Length: 276
Length: 203
Image (tube, rainbow over all chains, first blue to last red; front, side, top):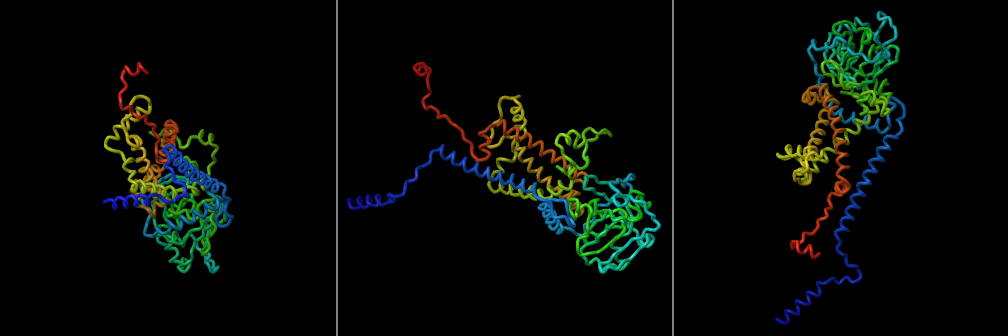
């Protein structure tokens, strides 16, 4: 028994910390713990806050993009717009159709925002639709040629970037019908369609899938009558998968290209694609 | 918000009389804001990602940490929230007992999450109404979805104002606890032996 007790004492001795050089850590008092944790959390809060504020200042003061096909937006924001378009393009399908309404719901007083490119005086009888193929070959069509194709009617809600939307009743030829009838199928393998007013004052660029959407029409009627003066006679674009800014009035020239065609509002800071 | 400043599309009209126009002219003049729609849209379509990601991360955190139990309203919360309101307006003296958050907070902090989800859904419904036609349908159509989206935005402004005022009123220690995650309470040790009247006289 005695031996055993001695052994036990020896063990107890050995358990004691042997580190002599190192300072033994003192247990922190409650107040110390509080101030330490406060320091850590407030430092984190401050750093995160400063980062957020700095990030915002950086973005707000970021220089504009180099003017080209698109212009007028801060460079990082333009990058974000383009990336966002790529992300949302994955859900784009020509099977998704814009909601249509009965004709009775269509507005009689059809809203009109601007007439850029369609306000100059023009002899409607002399108007021709010019098509420039990617090869440089040029074609011309009269309004009667276009009207001879099957007519497609569309009553849908026209949407403006400014926030308004209105149910409108348009009619014309499906762009895809126009392409097929005049043998332009090979052109649809390219990336983009460009459209321009005869006076070249207004112009839009469209990605090919949106142009090929079955509800994209070259419209020559509004509320069952030829396009009235302010709405781009004799032929305008109605493209429900895009905001109003892309719905060019009075088409002069249609062209095809793999490069993005120039676009009036994309040069003024708006999203190039503006898809819906 | 720049988006809503481009064109006064939003107004409250009852029986043909427009009561409020969003936004009134004095508002534009006060803040010196010109119409900068393109800029507003560009910011909006970047920050929508942060908004959504932040919301998703927050919801995941509350679920994983179990904090949601402190945040989700209980059966009694709706009744109690009114008492909290009366208390905060200094109409009633006592506030109902609470845990980490009071009944009004539970409702507010859960409502803001539902509003956030609503903003994302109505946002997608008006951002891509052709591609997400089912969401647009769910939100009662494009036009209505846009109004909800706008109303929710006003809701955030209201929440923000009340929130900041309440934080200021609650004082420094409360704000400190918001940042650090713990509250400091000075608890005076309770005397084990009750002081008697005689002791007090003697003292």
